[in-house]
Image (cartoon, rainbow, N blue to C red; front, top):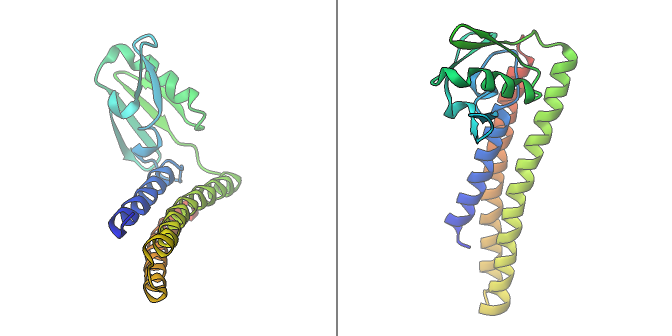
Length: 184
């Protein structure tokens, strides 16, 4: 496992956190709240995400519009969003589905902040697991290849710098989302 591989794996963990955090509802409507909801489409024959079945937009701060490409599955999309237990209530309005977000209570905000912190911690754990793999590789190099103590220390220091960089990115994602959650 070389430095590039470690960076790639840690960056994947950061991107996973970015995607996870994007699904947390804030006071503002965003397409990411519904785009990854899985729908049993076409009579349950296929499982597709909403983003694969429709155009999603947020024309107003508290409204999401889902415009299915195939009007025959509009009811299935509506049911799928309802079943997702996201607290959203979709309504069919002609050829589109309107999802109006209710105002968030302070209790909702507190729950979403707790969820945010859990998702951030999961990302940090993923990054630390990659670091652990790197440390094992350095240890093997010392035992099998006779890596010098100085080189071992340099490699461990570099690995920690890369880890700190990626943990910092996760923390920035968290700060940004927490600011969004605090905005009414």
